[in-house]
Amino acid sequence: MYFYINSPFKVSHYNFSDPRVKRDVRLAVLADLHNCMTENGGRQLFCAIDAEKPDAVIIAGDMVDAREHTDPYTTMGVIKRIYEHYPVIYGMGNHEKKLLDGRFLHRESRAFTKGLKEAGLKILSNSYKYLGDTGIKVTCLDLPLYYFRRVQDTELTVGQMKELLGEPDREYYNILIAHDPQYFDTYCGYGPDLVLSGHMHGGVVRLPFLGGLVSPKLKLFPKYDAGFFEKKDTSMIISRGLGMHTIRVRVNNSPELVIADIKGK
Image (tube, rainbow, N blue to C red):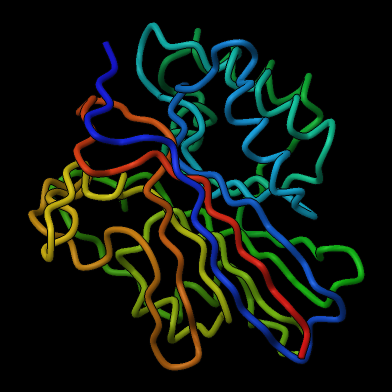
């Protein structure tokens, strides 16, 4: 059973500008759907996206749920519907990573890959895509699964990111899709202009003045839980996510569609 406590669906808007951007771009950012909101072919989610008329849809990972007896195929049908109307750039989350690994959840993995194939989509793994002629480059970071182990912290260095991704191309406005926001300090050292993340589910329970209560690593009051952060020349948006898994509760923590408007100066 899914519980939404005091948490209506919400659309959040953010605005950025940069002289390298050749024309104004609106991005819809999705994260952490976890097989939720698939009723009626995902009509509620699709209508919310369609009302904003984005130029492209960015997926920041974990649209599916890597657990037994889940239905990633139906979720991929929702994403296929979105892709039929809007360009989609799909970044890797730890749940997609686990399903594509091949060692786990064989039935669910087959359903997921079948849905991806039918949608005509490929998840970007430590690779990039140019967003048409906009002057925007979108790079997708794909970390090994051990970075997502609960309780345990694993170091990520700028050098490791450069080995995985190469150097940012400064002729472009660089967007980094990085599912886990806890490495924001390292992302800043690498040097993208904008980081799009999720993973934290807004901290599950949001408390006034304190923010999110718990992270997926079971740490209390995570530093990077939801919303907007900025350091040096790098900004980060952390989506509160669209669904739930394991802890199926949201308190003062609305499911969220993020809209990012990037304008040229």
